[in-house]
Image (cartoon, rainbow over all chains, first blue to last red; front, side, top):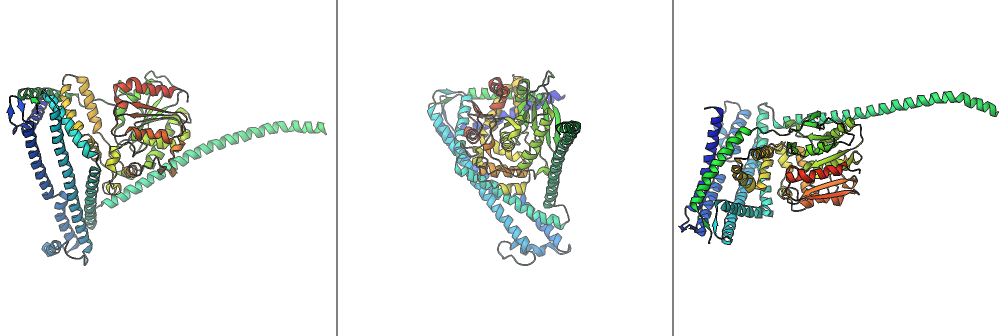
Length: 285
Length: 354
């Protein structure tokens, strides 16, 4: 198959995919809705849609709660690295198991108390992140419910036969209205803020842990890289300042040269004029 | 509910839509990459990621008019100002007989993480101004800033008013809390310190997600459903692809500058309170005494009109002019209407004696 034919086939596949997606979405919506002489029972259809979205949200929410984030799978890796780096390699890792298992329920003591605190902080950060994800999901669910109610109201206000395009526009407007209502609320701003902050905080905790591990293996760390970047930046600033000073110096030199020329010209003029003054002076005497 | 929907019509429409979409996607693939930034230009200066471009007049004529320096936002690429012939703000001003320059901030790299707004305004922009003034042997130029680039231009003009003959601001936020700004709304609870400390440069993907979250139905659904309608209109399809490319061709943001902009401008609204300090000096909007032309868009969801109009309240220019454009944020510099009336009007204003 040549390139053009291949491209056309790909585009067709994508087009079919889009159509299937639309059809599937449509089926989700109308399958449960009885139809009488071309007239849909919208209430039933919308109630079915709400039921399905509720179930989908509940499932997604549960997945978010239970899924192991990449950061968590790295905990295990961290523990192994940490143990290997700090202990003689022959020491069985199993020795540390009770300590790891008891994290969170015992005071921070002993030479590894800093590590314990790090792990506990990371664990708290993850719990906060999960909480803020759940809050945000709850808002998305509220938007979806609001959009269904909005669509119901708009259908109630419409009359006659709708084309599929008109129906799509109605759905779009209903969705936008419900979304904007929540988007502009203080609750949404707070939920977004919490999600962003908790996500940054969790990332920060992970970075701290990796920093120690990489350092103990004598590998370059983020802090070292940043320190180099900062110095590079300061050098760039100094270089620019020097360039600016050179420019100012060049301007001053040019002004000085001009002044010198002016003084020389004045001197020459004065030298030429002086004898005349003397002559005038003599005449005056 | 008395509303009827014809299942057969629906399936027919879906089938037609699929056929058109297949055709459009196939043609779209062939058209990519779409050319942008086609107006001839010369790179006259570069440092780090920044490039300064000069757009020479098409007839090769020299102009003794003051040069115009265009400053675009840090968050997107400036070729939105030069999408194609006939849809190019830069071309409009160049064809009006003014020497035109564009600051292209480039794509900040990891090593640019510590760049601050001081660096952007008092070093990079100052250096560009210096370069342009030297090339034209003049003491002042005209400055045109777009969106966040407008805010940077306002800061520059307030710090170095003697170098700015006239100032043009397009959809430029000045009062960051005015007019129910959605960006301020989303930014107000964000801990920018932790964000930048842990991420360094702020990724373009993160920012794009925020922008898309402001209009998800438009940007993720309607836009692509309507794409199918462009099957037989190649020019419109190419325009769509240009916009598509531009929307997601976003540079990462230098961490420190992002922190400063988020905290000092969006959260503390420091620009109008005289609390922004750059290069060791306070940005005092009262020093803006040059002629100013301030354009805002009536349906701007990123920079609400009162946010831009605030410039008129704080500047001291005896010759302050405000133009309201009926439309959205991007329409001010890419729409056909803007190219027909608004941009030539601004070019005319720049040509007038101050």
